[in-house]
Image: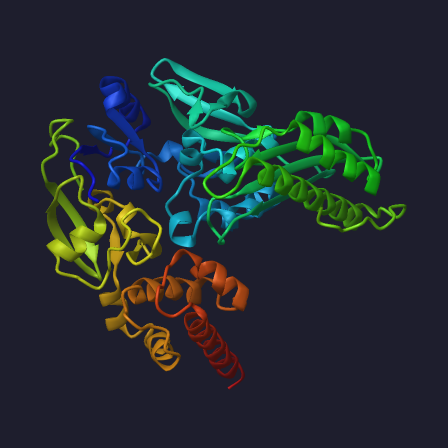
Length: 303
Length: 177
């Protein structure tokens, strides 16, 4: 189908974007990479009067380290993140996740900020932002505010962003030497939305899990962490018994919801599989870099 | 580019001037905001090589290059490309840059009806540049965004892998010659 008629503006300054947004309110839509918005326009699921294209706003671009934070401009594309040496070094979880996002032609235009603002529960970046304890930097004419990722996603495609606000950037604490990451997802075809996916981060302290964060995509109406499972792992050294208990705890706590292709029970099962694989990845990467000797080989069953 | 002083009414849906370089030729055009890049290329410029399949970013038949990078032409508005460079299969094939790829597609029967072919070639051309040492698995991942309903994909992947190998051999020969 063809998109309905609308108007279009491409301001060069952030202040002009915000002024247009305030003036036109709900009638206006911000256009970042457009890789979701354009599809919904073509299907007439969305009929704005005005698109405000942010491609010329320099303040929304670029990746940089400021203090102990990696700052990702809202208009940074998935491909830029995929190729960035800065990201590979300071936020390796994002480098692991990027290739899973859609397909190359979409990664070339789709943006980090757009993905966070849309808040798709099956998308990669919202879960990564949760797993990394990131912060969303939002701006309106009234000023700037910083929203922790755990407070940002509030429901299905719903965030705590106000109508007159936009995302300027996201900030992620830079990886510490003891931190380990794992990203994995199951999809019917490479690049499709995940059936189940997991973004995981842990500190590795005295050969044990510490400050584990497990953020799930494709499972519930919003990206969410499994806090009981995280707590179970806290301070524990890896063993087959621990992993089995973690999978059990996860399956009990995860409020999986069915989608078009998978029942809730199937998702719950697959999440357990995903957890086990990811914990193995975390353990392996800790063992290979910290000279972990005492670890007995763990079972690799897929259950 | 639209100059800020020539401000049009915020909510006008009328066509407006844009300056787009298509296949190396700069041009002044007039487009409505709602027109996506493929409709502009096909209907306004008569460049029918880029195909319109699903029109919501799934099938890849509309793959073109924007400032050198492949994009879904149905997920970009023509007005968004104001001041930018667009390359289509017409420009890419005329340039001769992918003649080996086109020949490999023919040799391997990597096309039947041809509807997906221009998108396949556009996507593969960026792969050849970006990942000249791609494995078969990487080729499959890269091409996963393009649908083909005729070939079953094996022939397409075979053709691309052959070009990767041939170009790599040529590079090694060139380096040792």
